[in-house]
Amino acid sequence: MNTQKAHPLLRLWRYARGYRRQMIAASVFSVLNKIFDLAPPALIGAAVDVVVQREDSIVASFGFPEVGTQLWILAGLTLIIFALESVFQYCYSVLWRNLAQSLEHELRIDAYAHVQDLDMTYFEDRSSGGLMAILNDDINQLERFLDGGANEVLQLITTILVIGGIFFYFAPSVAWMAALPMPFIMWGSIKFQQRLAPRYMRVRERVGMLSSQLANNLGGIATIKSFTTEKYELERISYQSDLYRESNRQAIWLSSAFVPLIRMVIVVGFIAILVFGGQLALSGNLNVGVYSLMVFITQRLLWPLTNLGNTLDLYQRAMASTTRVLDLLDTAPQITSGPLHLPVDQVRGEIRFENVCFEYSSSAGRTVIDDLTLHIHAGETVGIVGATGAGKSTLIKLLLRFYDVQQGRVTLDGYDIRQLRLEDLRRAIGFVSQDVYLFHGTVRENIAYGSFDATLEEVMEAARVAEAHDFIMALPQGYDTIVGERGQKLSGGQRQRISIARAVLKNPPVLILDEATSSVDNETEAAIQRSLERIAVGRTTIVIAHRL
View 1 (cartoon, rainbow, N blue to C red):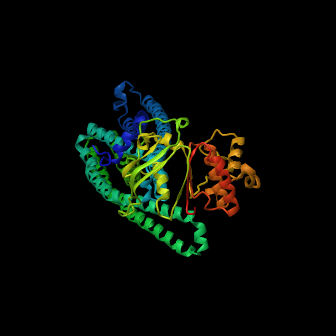
View 2: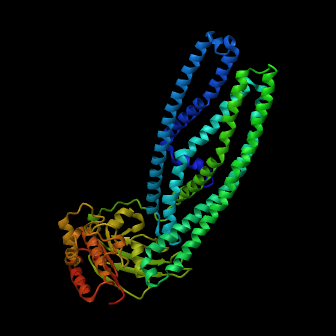
View 3: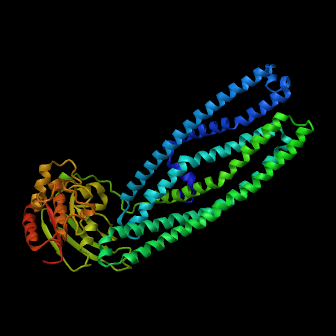
Protein backbone atom coordinates (compact mmCIF):
# COMPACT_ATOMS: atom_id res chain seq x y z
CA MET A 1 0.00 0.00 0.00
CA ASN A 2 1.27 3.46 -0.90
CA THR A 3 1.46 5.30 2.41
CA GLN A 4 1.18 8.67 0.68
CA LYS A 5 -2.29 7.59 -0.61
CA ALA A 6 -3.41 6.50 2.88
CA HIS A 7 -5.43 8.77 5.17
CA PRO A 8 -3.21 11.13 7.22
CA LEU A 9 -4.63 9.76 10.48
CA LEU A 10 -3.71 6.20 9.47
CA ARG A 11 -0.24 7.34 8.45
CA LEU A 12 0.18 9.09 11.80
CA TRP A 13 -0.97 5.92 13.65
CA ARG A 14 1.68 3.92 11.77
CA TYR A 15 4.35 6.47 12.54
CA ALA A 16 3.47 6.72 16.26
CA ARG A 17 3.68 2.98 16.96
CA GLY A 18 5.90 3.65 19.99
CA TYR A 19 3.16 5.77 21.55
CA ARG A 20 0.19 3.50 20.91
CA ARG A 21 -0.17 2.32 24.52
CA GLN A 22 -0.21 5.93 25.69
CA MET A 23 -2.76 6.79 23.00
CA ILE A 24 -5.00 3.91 24.03
CA ALA A 25 -4.74 4.80 27.73
CA ALA A 26 -5.53 8.47 27.01
CA SER A 27 -8.49 7.39 24.86
CA VAL A 28 -9.85 5.14 27.63
CA PHE A 29 -9.65 7.98 30.16
CA SER A 30 -11.37 10.35 27.71
CA VAL A 31 -14.22 7.86 27.26
CA LEU A 32 -14.57 7.22 31.01
CA ASN A 33 -14.56 10.94 31.75
CA LYS A 34 -17.37 11.50 29.27
CA ILE A 35 -19.41 8.58 30.64
CA PHE A 36 -19.28 10.06 34.15
CA ASP A 37 -19.87 13.54 32.71
CA LEU A 38 -23.15 12.25 31.24
CA ALA A 39 -24.30 10.80 34.59
CA PRO A 40 -25.65 14.02 36.26
CA PRO A 41 -28.75 14.18 33.98
CA ALA A 42 -29.51 10.59 35.06
CA LEU A 43 -29.18 11.68 38.70
CA ILE A 44 -31.55 14.61 38.08
CA GLY A 45 -34.07 12.27 36.49
CA ALA A 46 -33.73 9.90 39.43
CA ALA A 47 -34.23 12.79 41.89
CA VAL A 48 -37.38 13.91 40.07
CA ASP A 49 -38.58 10.31 40.12
CA VAL A 50 -37.98 10.10 43.91
CA VAL A 51 -39.92 13.33 44.55
CA VAL A 52 -42.84 12.29 42.33
CA GLN A 53 -43.02 8.54 42.88
CA ARG A 54 -41.64 8.44 46.45
CA GLU A 55 -41.83 4.80 47.67
CA ASP A 56 -42.46 3.63 44.10
CA SER A 57 -39.36 5.26 42.62
CA ILE A 58 -36.63 3.45 40.73
CA VAL A 59 -34.24 3.90 43.68
CA ALA A 60 -36.82 2.36 46.02
CA SER A 61 -36.87 -0.77 43.88
CA PHE A 62 -33.31 -1.44 45.04
CA GLY A 63 -34.51 -1.89 48.62
CA PHE A 64 -34.54 1.70 49.93
CA PRO A 65 -38.22 2.67 50.40
CA GLU A 66 -37.58 5.66 52.69
CA VAL A 67 -37.49 8.89 50.63
CA GLY A 68 -34.83 10.63 52.71
CA THR A 69 -32.51 7.64 52.36
CA GLN A 70 -33.07 7.68 48.60
CA LEU A 71 -32.00 11.34 48.39
CA TRP A 72 -28.88 10.69 50.47
CA ILE A 73 -28.01 7.77 48.21
CA LEU A 74 -28.34 10.06 45.20
CA ALA A 75 -26.18 12.65 46.99
CA GLY A 76 -23.48 10.02 47.64
CA LEU A 77 -23.61 8.84 44.02
CA THR A 78 -23.31 12.46 42.88
CA LEU A 79 -20.16 12.93 44.95
CA ILE A 80 -18.59 9.72 43.65
CA ILE A 81 -19.49 10.47 40.04
CA PHE A 82 -18.09 14.01 40.15
CA ALA A 83 -14.93 12.76 41.85
CA LEU A 84 -14.37 10.05 39.23
CA GLU A 85 -15.13 12.49 36.44
CA SER A 86 -12.47 14.86 37.83
CA VAL A 87 -9.91 12.05 38.23
CA PHE A 88 -10.40 10.82 34.67
CA GLN A 89 -10.26 14.38 33.33
CA TYR A 90 -6.92 14.89 35.06
CA CYS A 91 -5.63 11.58 33.68
CA TYR A 92 -6.64 12.17 30.07
CA SER A 93 -5.44 15.77 30.18
CA VAL A 94 -1.97 14.75 31.40
CA LEU A 95 -1.69 11.85 28.94
CA TRP A 96 -2.93 13.71 25.85
CA ARG A 97 -0.84 16.80 26.53
CA ASN A 98 2.32 14.82 27.27
CA LEU A 99 1.65 12.69 24.22
CA ALA A 100 1.29 15.83 22.11
CA GLN A 101 4.60 17.21 23.40
CA SER A 102 6.48 13.91 23.01
CA LEU A 103 5.16 13.17 19.53
CA GLU A 104 5.81 16.76 18.45
CA HIS A 105 9.40 16.47 19.68
CA GLU A 106 10.04 13.10 18.04
CA LEU A 107 8.39 14.09 14.77
CA ARG A 108 10.42 17.29 14.55
CA ILE A 109 13.68 15.50 15.36
CA ASP A 110 12.96 12.71 12.87
CA ALA A 111 11.96 15.18 10.18
CA TYR A 112 15.07 17.31 10.74
CA ALA A 113 17.33 14.24 10.78
CA HIS A 114 15.73 13.09 7.54
CA VAL A 115 16.25 16.51 5.95
CA GLN A 116 19.95 16.30 6.84
CA ASP A 117 20.13 12.93 5.05
CA LEU A 118 18.55 14.21 1.85
CA ASP A 119 20.89 14.91 -1.05
CA MET A 120 21.72 18.38 -2.34
CA THR A 121 19.45 17.91 -5.38
CA TYR A 122 16.44 17.97 -3.07
CA PHE A 123 17.29 21.49 -1.91
CA GLU A 124 17.81 22.94 -5.39
CA ASP A 125 14.12 23.71 -5.97
CA ARG A 126 13.06 24.16 -2.35
CA SER A 127 13.44 27.09 -0.02
CA SER A 128 14.73 26.92 3.52
CA GLY A 129 11.71 28.96 4.62
CA GLY A 130 9.32 26.35 3.24
CA LEU A 131 11.14 23.60 5.08
CA MET A 132 11.11 25.71 8.24
CA ALA A 133 7.31 26.01 7.94
CA ILE A 134 7.03 22.21 7.87
CA LEU A 135 9.52 21.59 10.69
CA ASN A 136 8.00 24.24 12.93
CA ASP A 137 4.51 25.47 12.09
CA ASP A 138 3.06 22.25 10.64
CA ILE A 139 4.32 20.12 13.52
CA ASN A 140 2.97 22.68 15.99
CA GLN A 141 -0.42 22.43 14.26
CA LEU A 142 -0.47 18.68 14.84
CA GLU A 143 0.51 19.23 18.48
CA ARG A 144 -2.46 21.58 18.96
CA PHE A 145 -4.85 18.91 17.66
CA LEU A 146 -3.44 16.17 19.90
CA ASP A 147 -3.51 18.58 22.84
CA GLY A 148 -7.30 18.94 22.74
CA GLY A 149 -8.92 17.97 19.47
CA ALA A 150 -8.39 14.22 19.76
CA ASN A 151 -10.10 14.17 23.15
CA GLU A 152 -13.03 16.17 21.80
CA VAL A 153 -13.54 13.72 18.93
CA LEU A 154 -13.51 10.72 21.27
CA GLN A 155 -15.86 12.32 23.76
CA LEU A 156 -18.28 13.29 21.01
CA ILE A 157 -18.43 9.70 19.77
CA THR A 158 -18.86 8.46 23.35
CA THR A 159 -21.71 10.93 23.91
CA ILE A 160 -23.57 9.70 20.84
CA LEU A 161 -23.19 6.02 21.72
CA VAL A 162 -24.00 6.31 25.45
CA ILE A 163 -27.00 8.62 25.11
CA GLY A 164 -28.29 6.69 22.11
CA GLY A 165 -28.18 3.52 24.20
CA ILE A 166 -30.03 5.21 27.08
CA PHE A 167 -32.78 6.46 24.76
CA PHE A 168 -33.36 3.12 23.14
CA TYR A 169 -33.39 1.36 26.53
CA PHE A 170 -35.79 3.67 28.42
CA ALA A 171 -37.97 5.09 25.64
CA PRO A 172 -37.54 3.32 22.31
CA SER A 173 -40.77 4.85 21.03
CA VAL A 174 -39.29 8.39 20.98
CA ALA A 175 -35.60 7.54 20.67
CA TRP A 176 -35.76 8.06 16.92
CA MET A 177 -36.71 11.70 17.51
CA ALA A 178 -33.41 12.42 19.25
CA ALA A 179 -31.56 10.46 16.58
CA LEU A 180 -33.37 12.21 13.73
CA PRO A 181 -30.83 15.05 13.30
CA MET A 182 -27.84 12.70 13.49
CA PRO A 183 -27.71 11.55 9.84
CA PHE A 184 -27.98 15.14 8.65
CA ILE A 185 -25.24 16.23 11.04
CA MET A 186 -22.93 13.40 9.96
CA TRP A 187 -23.64 14.01 6.28
CA GLY A 188 -23.03 17.71 6.72
CA SER A 189 -19.80 17.06 8.61
CA ILE A 190 -18.46 14.82 5.85
CA LYS A 191 -19.36 17.36 3.18
CA PHE A 192 -17.76 20.18 5.12
CA GLN A 193 -14.66 18.05 5.66
CA GLN A 194 -14.37 17.31 1.95
CA ARG A 195 -14.62 20.98 1.07
CA LEU A 196 -12.37 22.15 3.91
CA ALA A 197 -9.49 19.72 3.25
CA PRO A 198 -8.16 21.35 0.03
CA ARG A 199 -8.61 24.81 1.51
CA TYR A 200 -6.48 24.00 4.52
CA MET A 201 -3.86 22.33 2.34
CA ARG A 202 -3.70 25.60 0.40
CA VAL A 203 -3.33 27.49 3.71
CA ARG A 204 -0.33 25.32 4.63
CA GLU A 205 1.25 25.90 1.22
CA ARG A 206 0.76 29.65 1.49
CA VAL A 207 2.30 29.84 4.96
CA GLY A 208 5.31 27.95 3.60
CA MET A 209 5.72 30.51 0.81
CA LEU A 210 5.42 33.37 3.29
CA SER A 211 8.01 31.81 5.61
CA SER A 212 10.35 31.31 2.67
CA GLN A 213 10.08 34.95 1.63
CA LEU A 214 10.66 36.17 5.19
CA ALA A 215 13.71 33.93 5.60
CA ASN A 216 15.19 35.14 2.31
CA ASN A 217 14.66 38.79 3.20
CA LEU A 218 16.15 38.49 6.68
CA GLY A 219 19.16 36.70 5.24
CA GLY A 220 19.64 39.41 2.62
CA ILE A 221 18.92 42.43 4.82
CA ALA A 222 22.27 44.06 3.98
CA THR A 223 21.51 43.87 0.25
CA ILE A 224 18.02 45.26 0.82
CA LYS A 225 19.42 48.21 2.73
CA SER A 226 22.26 48.90 0.29
CA PHE A 227 19.88 48.99 -2.69
CA THR A 228 17.18 50.87 -0.71
CA THR A 229 14.56 48.30 -1.70
CA GLU A 230 12.79 48.24 1.66
CA LYS A 231 9.51 49.41 0.13
CA TYR A 232 9.71 46.86 -2.68
CA GLU A 233 10.38 44.01 -0.25
CA LEU A 234 7.62 45.20 2.07
CA GLU A 235 5.21 45.03 -0.86
CA ARG A 236 6.37 41.47 -1.68
CA ILE A 237 5.89 40.36 1.94
CA SER A 238 2.54 42.11 2.00
CA TYR A 239 1.50 40.27 -1.16
CA GLN A 240 2.47 36.85 0.24
CA SER A 241 0.84 37.65 3.59
CA ASP A 242 -2.32 38.75 1.80
CA LEU A 243 -2.42 35.44 -0.13
CA TYR A 244 -2.09 33.61 3.18
CA ARG A 245 -4.85 35.75 4.71
CA GLU A 246 -7.12 35.18 1.73
CA SER A 247 -6.65 31.38 1.79
CA ASN A 248 -7.46 31.44 5.53
CA ARG A 249 -10.47 33.65 4.87
CA GLN A 250 -11.89 31.17 2.37
CA ALA A 251 -11.50 28.37 4.90
CA ILE A 252 -12.98 30.51 7.69
CA TRP A 253 -16.08 31.41 5.66
CA LEU A 254 -16.86 27.73 5.16
CA SER A 255 -15.94 26.48 8.63
CA SER A 256 -17.84 29.31 10.36
CA ALA A 257 -21.07 28.40 8.52
CA PHE A 258 -21.02 24.91 9.99
CA VAL A 259 -22.12 25.69 13.56
CA PRO A 260 -25.19 27.89 12.74
CA LEU A 261 -26.48 25.35 10.20
CA ILE A 262 -25.96 22.40 12.55
CA ARG A 263 -27.64 24.27 15.41
CA MET A 264 -30.84 24.64 13.39
CA VAL A 265 -30.84 20.92 12.65
CA ILE A 266 -30.22 20.12 16.31
CA VAL A 267 -33.14 22.17 17.60
CA VAL A 268 -35.54 19.99 15.60
CA GLY A 269 -34.58 16.92 17.64
CA PHE A 270 -34.74 18.84 20.91
CA ILE A 271 -38.24 20.19 20.17
CA ALA A 272 -39.44 16.73 19.14
CA ILE A 273 -38.37 15.20 22.47
CA LEU A 274 -39.74 18.16 24.43
CA VAL A 275 -43.20 18.01 22.84
CA PHE A 276 -43.80 14.37 22.02
CA GLY A 277 -42.00 13.04 25.10
CA GLY A 278 -44.03 15.44 27.24
CA GLN A 279 -47.26 14.17 25.72
CA LEU A 280 -46.24 10.60 26.55
CA ALA A 281 -45.48 11.62 30.15
CA LEU A 282 -48.83 13.42 30.49
CA SER A 283 -50.68 10.37 29.19
CA GLY A 284 -48.86 8.13 31.67
CA ASN A 285 -46.99 6.17 29.01
CA LEU A 286 -43.63 7.58 30.08
CA ASN A 287 -42.20 7.88 33.61
CA VAL A 288 -41.79 11.53 34.67
CA GLY A 289 -38.26 10.87 35.87
CA VAL A 290 -37.38 9.24 32.56
CA TYR A 291 -38.91 12.22 30.72
CA SER A 292 -36.77 14.60 32.81
CA LEU A 293 -33.72 12.48 32.01
CA MET A 294 -34.52 12.56 28.29
CA VAL A 295 -34.96 16.33 28.19
CA PHE A 296 -31.67 16.96 29.97
CA ILE A 297 -29.76 14.28 28.14
CA THR A 298 -31.05 15.40 24.73
CA GLN A 299 -29.42 18.71 25.39
CA ARG A 300 -26.23 16.89 26.40
CA LEU A 301 -26.39 14.90 23.16
CA LEU A 302 -27.21 17.58 20.64
CA TRP A 303 -25.70 20.83 21.84
CA PRO A 304 -22.11 19.51 21.98
CA LEU A 305 -22.47 18.85 18.27
CA THR A 306 -22.33 22.61 17.74
CA ASN A 307 -18.65 22.35 18.69
CA LEU A 308 -18.15 19.82 15.94
CA GLY A 309 -17.34 22.67 13.57
CA ASN A 310 -14.45 23.90 15.71
CA THR A 311 -13.22 20.35 16.25
CA LEU A 312 -13.50 19.64 12.54
CA ASP A 313 -11.64 22.86 11.78
CA LEU A 314 -8.79 21.91 14.11
CA TYR A 315 -8.78 18.36 12.73
CA GLN A 316 -8.52 19.46 9.10
CA ARG A 317 -5.70 21.87 9.84
CA ALA A 318 -3.85 19.08 11.66
CA MET A 319 -4.39 16.56 8.85
CA ALA A 320 -3.12 19.02 6.24
CA SER A 321 -0.01 19.61 8.35
CA THR A 322 0.41 15.88 9.02
CA THR A 323 0.35 15.17 5.30
CA ARG A 324 3.11 17.71 4.66
CA VAL A 325 5.33 16.42 7.49
CA LEU A 326 4.90 12.73 6.63
CA ASP A 327 5.39 13.43 2.92
CA LEU A 328 8.73 14.95 3.87
CA LEU A 329 9.61 11.86 5.92
CA ASP A 330 8.60 9.62 3.00
CA THR A 331 10.96 11.41 0.61
CA ALA A 332 13.72 8.93 -0.17
CA PRO A 333 17.34 10.20 -0.35
CA GLN A 334 18.98 9.77 -3.74
CA ILE A 335 22.47 9.63 -2.19
CA THR A 336 22.72 6.62 0.12
CA SER A 337 25.62 5.41 2.23
CA GLY A 338 27.68 2.49 0.97
CA PRO A 339 28.46 -0.68 2.95
CA LEU A 340 32.26 -0.44 3.19
CA HIS A 341 33.95 0.89 6.33
CA LEU A 342 37.21 2.81 5.80
CA PRO A 343 38.71 4.19 9.03
CA VAL A 344 40.17 7.67 8.69
CA ASP A 345 43.56 6.61 10.02
CA GLN A 346 43.85 4.10 7.17
CA VAL A 347 43.12 6.60 4.37
CA ARG A 348 46.19 7.38 2.22
CA GLY A 349 44.47 9.99 0.04
CA GLU A 350 44.83 8.67 -3.50
CA ILE A 351 42.01 10.11 -5.64
CA ARG A 352 40.91 9.16 -9.13
CA PHE A 353 38.24 10.57 -11.44
CA GLU A 354 37.73 7.95 -14.15
CA ASN A 355 35.82 9.03 -17.30
CA VAL A 356 33.47 11.12 -15.18
CA CYS A 357 30.42 12.82 -16.73
CA PHE A 358 28.01 14.98 -14.77
CA GLU A 359 25.25 17.53 -15.25
CA TYR A 360 22.98 19.21 -12.73
CA SER A 361 19.26 18.48 -12.90
CA SER A 362 18.65 22.20 -13.32
CA SER A 363 21.27 22.70 -16.07
CA ALA A 364 18.82 21.86 -18.89
CA GLY A 365 20.99 19.17 -20.44
CA ARG A 366 24.25 21.15 -20.30
CA THR A 367 27.09 18.82 -19.31
CA VAL A 368 29.26 20.43 -16.62
CA ILE A 369 31.92 17.70 -16.60
CA ASP A 370 32.44 15.59 -19.72
CA ASP A 371 34.60 12.44 -19.74
CA LEU A 372 37.10 13.72 -17.17
CA THR A 373 39.97 11.52 -16.02
CA LEU A 374 42.18 12.80 -13.21
CA HIS A 375 44.67 11.02 -10.93
CA ILE A 376 45.86 12.65 -7.70
CA HIS A 377 48.52 10.67 -5.85
CA ALA A 378 48.42 10.26 -2.08
CA GLY A 379 50.13 13.18 -0.33
CA GLU A 380 50.22 15.25 -3.51
CA THR A 381 49.21 18.91 -3.72
CA VAL A 382 47.20 19.72 -6.84
CA GLY A 383 45.92 23.07 -8.05
CA ILE A 384 42.80 23.29 -10.20
CA VAL A 385 42.47 26.60 -12.01
CA GLY A 386 39.71 27.72 -14.33
CA ALA A 387 37.08 30.30 -15.16
CA THR A 388 33.88 30.71 -13.19
CA GLY A 389 31.40 27.98 -14.10
CA ALA A 390 34.05 25.65 -15.51
CA GLY A 391 33.16 22.94 -12.97
CA LYS A 392 35.96 23.30 -10.42
CA SER A 393 33.68 23.27 -7.37
CA THR A 394 31.57 20.55 -8.95
CA LEU A 395 34.56 18.21 -8.77
CA ILE A 396 34.68 18.72 -5.03
CA LYS A 397 30.94 18.15 -4.65
CA LEU A 398 31.32 14.88 -6.52
CA LEU A 399 34.23 13.84 -4.32
CA LEU A 400 32.21 14.61 -1.18
CA ARG A 401 29.19 12.84 -2.74
CA PHE A 402 26.95 15.84 -2.51
CA TYR A 403 26.02 14.55 -5.95
CA ASP A 404 26.72 11.27 -7.75
CA VAL A 405 28.32 11.02 -11.18
CA GLN A 406 26.09 10.03 -14.10
CA GLN A 407 28.91 8.17 -15.84
CA GLY A 408 32.32 6.95 -14.76
CA ARG A 409 33.38 6.74 -11.14
CA VAL A 410 35.33 8.53 -8.41
CA THR A 411 37.65 6.50 -6.18
CA LEU A 412 39.47 7.06 -2.89
CA ASP A 413 42.40 4.71 -2.31
CA GLY A 414 41.00 2.47 -5.03
CA TYR A 415 37.49 2.25 -3.53
CA ASP A 416 34.54 3.56 -5.51
CA ILE A 417 33.26 6.25 -3.14
CA ARG A 418 29.69 5.05 -3.75
CA GLN A 419 30.68 1.85 -1.90
CA LEU A 420 32.04 3.70 1.14
CA ARG A 421 30.07 4.78 4.16
CA LEU A 422 29.24 8.48 3.75
CA GLU A 423 30.44 9.17 7.29
CA ASP A 424 33.86 7.62 6.60
CA LEU A 425 34.23 9.40 3.25
CA ARG A 426 33.43 12.86 4.59
CA ARG A 427 35.45 12.45 7.78
CA ALA A 428 38.47 11.79 5.58
CA ILE A 429 38.05 15.12 3.79
CA GLY A 430 38.57 18.60 5.19
CA PHE A 431 36.64 21.15 3.13
CA VAL A 432 37.12 24.92 3.12
CA SER A 433 34.40 26.36 0.89
CA GLN A 434 34.45 29.67 -0.90
CA ASP A 435 31.06 30.28 0.78
CA VAL A 436 32.19 30.27 4.40
CA TYR A 437 29.51 29.44 6.94
CA LEU A 438 30.03 30.21 10.62
CA PHE A 439 27.46 29.29 13.26
CA HIS A 440 26.19 31.70 15.89
CA GLY A 441 28.53 31.11 18.81
CA THR A 442 32.10 31.82 19.88
CA VAL A 443 35.23 31.76 17.76
CA ARG A 444 36.43 28.71 19.66
CA GLU A 445 33.16 26.83 19.07
CA ASN A 446 33.35 27.53 15.35
CA ILE A 447 36.94 26.35 15.01
CA ALA A 448 36.20 23.23 17.06
CA TYR A 449 33.03 22.48 15.08
CA GLY A 450 33.18 18.80 14.19
CA SER A 451 36.15 18.31 16.55
CA PHE A 452 34.18 18.94 19.72
CA ASP A 453 36.64 17.30 22.09
CA ALA A 454 39.53 19.53 21.01
CA THR A 455 41.34 21.43 23.77
CA LEU A 456 41.85 25.18 23.73
CA GLU A 457 45.54 24.64 23.00
CA GLU A 458 44.68 22.54 19.94
CA VAL A 459 42.20 25.16 18.76
CA MET A 460 44.82 27.90 19.15
CA GLU A 461 47.45 25.88 17.28
CA ALA A 462 45.04 25.35 14.37
CA ALA A 463 44.36 29.09 14.36
CA ARG A 464 48.09 29.84 14.22
CA VAL A 465 48.51 27.53 11.24
CA ALA A 466 45.65 29.35 9.51
CA GLU A 467 47.20 32.77 10.36
CA ALA A 468 44.10 33.57 12.45
CA HIS A 469 45.48 33.63 16.00
CA ASP A 470 46.64 37.25 16.01
CA PHE A 471 43.35 38.79 14.89
CA ILE A 472 41.39 36.48 17.22
CA MET A 473 43.41 37.66 20.22
CA ALA A 474 42.63 41.24 19.19
CA LEU A 475 38.89 40.60 19.44
CA PRO A 476 37.08 41.83 22.60
CA GLN A 477 36.84 38.38 24.25
CA GLY A 478 39.47 36.60 22.18
CA TYR A 479 38.44 33.01 21.46
CA ASP A 480 35.23 33.53 23.47
CA THR A 481 34.02 36.35 21.20
CA ILE A 482 30.55 35.77 19.71
CA VAL A 483 30.80 35.87 15.91
CA GLY A 484 27.09 36.52 15.27
CA GLU A 485 24.77 34.71 12.88
CA ARG A 486 26.76 33.48 9.85
CA GLY A 487 29.78 35.24 11.38
CA GLN A 488 28.44 38.68 10.51
CA LYS A 489 30.58 40.39 13.18
CA LEU A 490 33.76 39.36 11.34
CA SER A 491 35.20 40.42 8.01
CA GLY A 492 35.19 38.07 5.02
CA GLY A 493 38.89 37.35 5.41
CA GLN A 494 38.53 36.65 9.13
CA ARG A 495 35.67 34.22 8.48
CA GLN A 496 37.73 32.44 5.84
CA ARG A 497 40.73 32.02 8.13
CA ILE A 498 38.50 30.59 10.89
CA SER A 499 37.11 28.17 8.32
CA ILE A 500 40.65 27.11 7.39
CA ALA A 501 41.51 26.67 11.08
CA ARG A 502 38.44 24.45 11.44
CA ALA A 503 39.66 22.21 8.61
CA VAL A 504 43.22 22.13 10.02
CA LEU A 505 41.93 21.07 13.46
CA LYS A 506 40.01 18.23 11.83
CA ASN A 507 43.39 16.96 10.55
CA PRO A 508 41.98 15.03 7.57
CA PRO A 509 44.08 12.95 5.16
CA VAL A 510 42.52 14.94 2.27
CA LEU A 511 42.25 18.73 2.40
CA ILE A 512 40.27 20.80 -0.12
CA LEU A 513 40.58 24.57 -0.37
CA ASP A 514 37.91 25.98 -2.67
CA GLU A 515 38.87 29.61 -3.36
CA ALA A 516 40.11 29.76 0.23
CA THR A 517 41.93 33.07 -0.27
CA SER A 518 39.27 34.83 -2.35
CA SER A 519 38.21 37.14 0.50
CA VAL A 520 41.57 38.11 1.97
CA ASP A 521 44.04 40.89 1.24
CA ASN A 522 47.41 40.29 -0.40
CA GLU A 523 49.29 40.21 2.89
CA THR A 524 46.92 37.68 4.45
CA GLU A 525 46.91 35.64 1.26
CA ALA A 526 50.69 35.43 1.39
CA ALA A 527 50.51 34.37 5.04
CA ILE A 528 47.95 31.66 4.25
CA GLN A 529 50.10 30.43 1.37
CA ARG A 530 53.02 30.12 3.77
CA SER A 531 50.84 28.16 6.18
CA LEU A 532 49.70 25.88 3.36
CA GLU A 533 53.24 24.62 3.07
CA ARG A 534 52.86 23.27 6.61
CA ILE A 535 49.23 22.18 6.19
CA ALA A 536 49.90 20.16 3.04
CA VAL A 537 52.63 18.01 4.58
CA GLY A 538 51.54 14.38 4.83
CA ARG A 539 48.13 14.84 3.25
CA THR A 540 46.53 15.11 -0.19
CA THR A 541 45.67 18.74 -0.87
CA ILE A 542 43.46 20.10 -3.63
CA VAL A 543 43.55 23.86 -4.14
CA ILE A 544 40.92 25.47 -6.37
CA ALA A 545 41.48 29.01 -7.60
CA HIS A 546 40.70 31.45 -10.37
CA ARG A 547 44.31 32.60 -10.62
CA LEU A 548 47.49 30.59 -10.96
